[in-house]
Image (tube, each protein chain N blue to C red):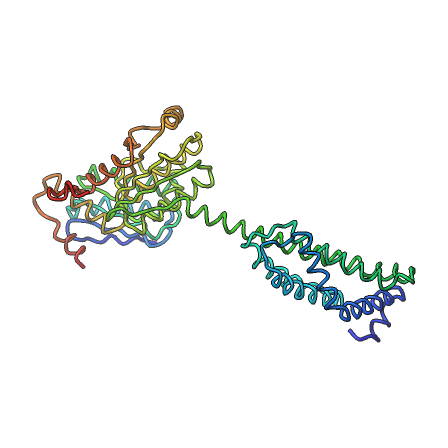
Length: 297
Length: 134
């Protein structure tokens, strides 16, 4: 946008505002070194960003400062937003907290405001006008950085949740055509659904004939999830696989009886070892201990 | 769309290749039940790998086919039910009770071989063995 078009379209007031912002930017550029140092010092004093070294803080402070001035000058926040996202990506894994990020942005705001006070202390009216121009922009910048950080953090958390969910239901092949599915922890309906999906896919990809589901690590199970488990067993049968469930706790046994599961369809064995032995029998395996290795270990 | 019914040794193989209308299903049922007697087949394999939806009519027809075939003196096995289809069938309570199922065609043939051997059929299923080796 050229100056002429700004003058042509804007009212005198906003023209003054942009004029003031330009002055402000010039001031910030002039005092770049000093203000940057001041800011980095305040960050260290406030014991923020403790995971970073002195030099690193200074380097980041410089980058943020330049982006900040840039955003003030251009009035566009995309570059700053991208930088904030990038910065968050780097510092979140190192354990930087939300309050630290908000803290440093507010510190920068304070440092800059103070330098304005110092510069214009003789002309109170002008100071007021400059602050009028500066504050909304500064607030918006602080907002952008903080929101960027929080969004990045949420993204990381979502990714981790997804990773935990996938890891929480491994489907493992122990022998040719024999899968085991150890389940640990409480099963909620969503996890139950995912479990079913992974098991049925696993049966298909591994061409399994027998699956042992071990629920020793499941403390309790409500009727919905128990019912889901029974349905999973049925669905596995439609894929041509037999399911053996092992490690039912007394409480879960009671739940299953209470909801009236057809026990003829459910193949259960006391523990995982028994389950695997049963599965091996069904597949025609026989495990033999060789006589000369009986005392080996 | 009509479903081809192929003779393979002692077995009949019907591979469903796309979603079928109710009329097609009835035609499949009648065709298979007729052929199984005509060709003196010992077993029938119905391959539903290509189906990603199965409704209650299809499920019931498959169950009917299995029962009618049994009455005609042969065994039926349904192969290739997709995982999602399997679970939605169970959720709808359409669990194909009493119908043999297997993972895929190969498993289905192995199942029928075992069934027939178990029943003391002296004639070994040469056709099925040949197919497995291919």
